[in-house]
Length: 254
Image (cartoon, rainbow, N blue to C red):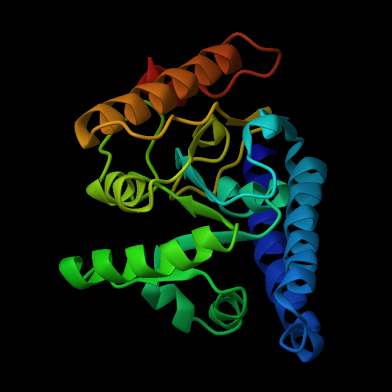
């Protein structure tokens, strides 16, 4: 039954996104960015609704008060699953994502991303990529946007050894930015590179901003400790809840 529901969800999830991207295209590209985000958020909410109805997932969102109002910030988030890539934006007024530049050339998805003015990074050219990322992020930060970055650069299995990259440290230092860490437990219920989804409560928690003015080393240590400690606490909470994740996933995080 779980396999059947997971397969059905994955198919419906993809079809739903593709259908809505095509459906909204005739008007989307003529809208201002503010109205464009309303459409993107509508698509995101529909994905959550499908996951709830088909898989039985529930969702818990915490710490929204930690997101600065009417000011730019950088959301530095743990990344375990596809789930947070679209869930995160629901709580941000004018978000932007730092993502691989090649994603911008995908039909429909890439066109929508271009329209919403995200930050594409060419990871094959590290020096140039860092300079470009910093330049574009500065413009968006000064516009008061919320920039989402995954400091480890890719999805991680629960309990995997953390590997925080230099990019977030560079942005913190160069932009003198407000950094809002984010923790989650999504990998316990929607693991990366897996068609299986498991019922349970997926949690996204925005944590208290990290103060400005730290040295690079102190900031990196602070960021990693903050995110990993909160993420581990959420996974411990899941393991003892009413709908615990599969034991093999939780044991990896223990």
